[in-house]
Length: 253
Image 1: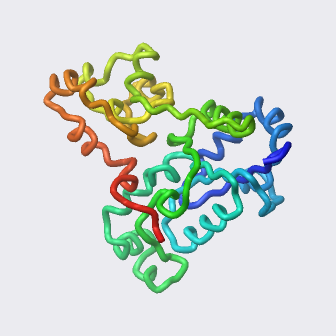
Image 2: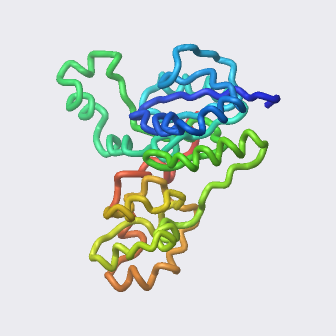
């Protein structure tokens, strides 16, 4: 990538909360800017360049025009990083897919929506349904430390290390009591860790925003789940906020 690589940030269907997490790296930003040129970042700057090496992409794809723009980004970038749940698995936006698109248009924009081209919409998909993604930073929003870790690895020419073990590991390291012991249910046993189990630590449960681990070791959690009459499949079905777009689909032509 040369001595000083160029990075760009893009957003599609999302809240841009993951990019705000990047901007929250106040104390680290001076060092980052000494190592990389940020040439496109709508949340942070008005200047824009189409010459970049690394593209961080936030947001899922819900319109044909977004898919076209995404493919152009892939053509220009040497490395594409999916930034957050929406781009990695489809995120919360996948909830829209449970309804006919005509119904969604009418509910959101009113009776005239189907007549307006600006209101065109399609079932939501993560960005790897359309392009090859090199690396993923999971979460809703992404953890600040994981973004810094991935960026550092890329700048050093290394392969970023992304957690591929369940949130239960993070929970144990944080000293949390298992939520199953409190009469609650979560998808921590099958969800990718790396978040320090922040939701459980602060009194909630794991909703699966980081997507499923590659090969859930359901046997390791069988005893706990059976104790409460549950299976990994039943737990996964009970939580449909995240990851519904990721399974069972290939790349769009």
